[in-house]
Amino acid sequence: MPSITVLGIAGSEREDSRARTALQVALRAARKAGAKVEVLDVSNLDGRASTVHDLPQEEVADRVGTAVANADALIVATPTFHGGISGPLRAILESIPNDAIAGKATALVSVTGGSADRGDPLEPLRQQLQGLRAWVVPNRAVVPFAFRAFDRAGNPTDPEVRERLETVGREVARYGRLLQEMRPDSAAPAPVVAATTTPIVLSRGRRAS
Image (tube, rainbow, N blue to C red; front, side, top):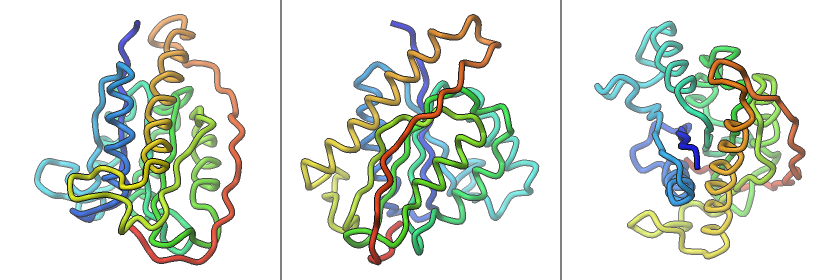
């Protein structure tokens, strides 16, 4: 079984970020599925607690581009702000070189403070990533009521939430491996196939991060 690296990106700079907690659950499932996992910490890009807002744009682009280019697959997690993705994640996505994510399996996770929020932050995120030629996996995970979704150890309190996140982790590892096997060599990009996802209609809820 070929080895792959799954990179997790949590679009929140908060130390107690629930988006990061949700991401870790998905990454643990990817690891159990045989993947090596790494995390791009948007609150500590340079090891000195520098965020995307603290560093020059060129340095952010270099660090983000290197991390994404070295990964075989990605899990992108975001808090929901007014129905959209977070500012830090938006800055990260704008720093990804056009070819760094092409043909790579990418899974999406969002957390929200209520039952849901108006709009669906993952649908425009999916479109943006597919614009970068990522292969977005069919399943995605939305965690409602994120303020009570995890215990102090970071474990989901709801079995359904756990299953959503773990399914995302397992799927991105599986698709990442399949796409890697399809590459003639490490220099050639994998074919890009548009994955259809089911839109989630959300209603106004609390803000989560």
